[in-house]
Figure 1 (cartoon, helix red, strand yellow):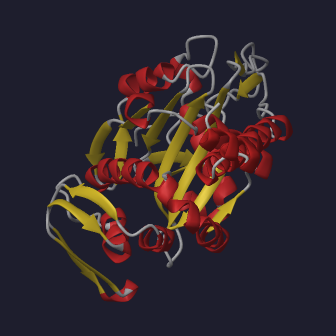
Figure 2: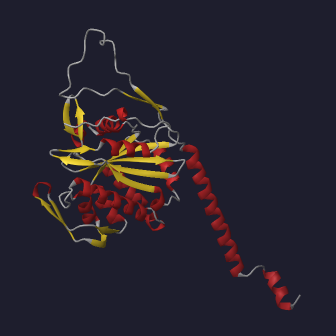
Length: 338
């Protein structure tokens, strides 16, 4: 051994080696904390369980239906409820966008398959006609009874279980977008709209651009900017939500976690348990949203004053969600035509 090597051996490792060892143990410790933390989340946030059997009541009579038979041989022929078996690992959530003046301005059904690692987002046009208490109504009017009433209406309309709801004041999008420094988004049309009653001014040029909070809220709310009104807006909303999620779930936004949580508390109302939120968050880690997320809308046509659904197209869409073990029959849906 040379003289310099002997002196180095007596002094111990060089500062560079000591630094490398220190960094190694720090990174190892952080990795261990992350692994243990993730395992704890998985342990204490088990997968939510829904009803295995879903009962769908018989179709009610419409306003012009003949009176029910109360005597004679057909009097005892009670309609039989439909019972379907729900697939394990499939979860649903109703997303509601609410404006300051009240009422549900946006209705979307989210479906998450934890086995296939896929998610679907279905827009339900706010003017969709439903039958409620023997009268035809627009589905967004059910929000007068609270989010739970909208959940019930969607369940009856589509024949699918709705596990929970998340009701978001549309101002939340403005706050979140500003907190993460804006969202890059391709605005599809010129948006020019003013509503003094809501103190709402929307003035946005089309094209790919960085949206601040105010413009993001305008993109989410502008309904009269499209020839197809709510249908066009719904497509833009789905695209914007996808962009927002992808640009929010980044390491650069770790520092914004506290402010994002405060925004959630201020603007969001939900009946989803915290354990379920944690479970879905852990499941979403590493998902490729471009490949895993599909978005669509309930097809139909505008026959004033309602959006009237296409029976066959909506039934096909419901079956494509694979919520049940069985194929969903037409009588499971409660589509009406005034």
